[in-house]
Image 1 (tube, helix red, strand yellow):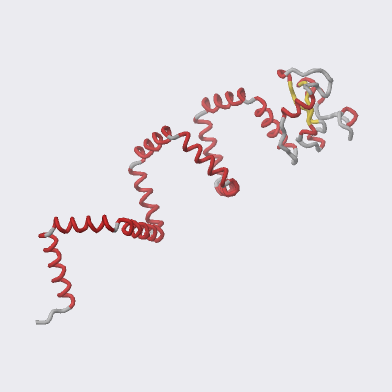
Image 2 (tube, rainbow, N blue to C red):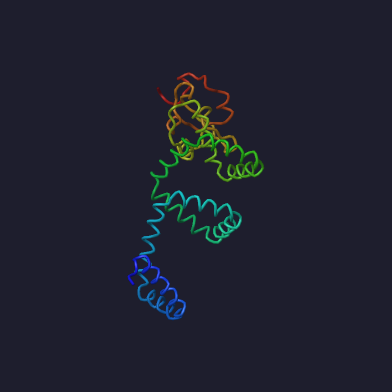
Amino acid sequence: MTLTIEEKKERKTAYMRVWRATHKEQNTANRKAYEQSHREEIRERRRVYSRLWRTENKELLRQLKAAEYQRHKESIRARQAEYYQQNADRIKAVVNAYRLSHLEKKKAGDAAYYLTHGDERRIAASVYYYSHLKEVSASNKARRLANPDKEREYSYRRRTGKNSNIIQAVKLGAVMQRDRMICGICHKRVARKGLSFDHIVPLSKGGTHAEWNLQVSHLRCNMRRGAGRIPAQMRMAL
């Protein structure tokens, strides 16, 4: 009696099934011995297969991860928060090192993201601000008190940005040291409490926000003079 190929396959499959059932322990021992002697080879095959599968099933993998996250959102967030608390310094160091080594890439990515998600970012920022108004106000106040010079510089840059196309980075401490805390308008000493910085050539007259165009002044002197000065009133020769 001649068997067909399909019948031979079925008979072989049945024989192997019976053999595995009767030699279960031996089969397990053989498999473990093979895995021990070919560990690196097996791992490499698995890595290659995993990379290939991930490459061919990116969308399916994304959907599976999203579904898994939705099912275990709370536990995942709790684990992430716990891990961050335990490794905060190391995580910050790694993030800062990556940012420094990929500065241009990060700037380009941020710029592209802001262009495509500008409205979303503005809405999210507004929602967060009004839902955490007290916390944000307290944080801003503490920052201003802790960094008065930086806050003053930021305020100048923000105001001048509305009136001038030319804005340079300014170190107000250098201006204070250069002028020796002497008012450029009344030529009297200026206390920190009443300190102000006067644009020699007003921004409304085309002046720039730069160190060479700034002078120490009393706040009252700066406000009294205003932007309607004439060249003869300016310290700098034009």
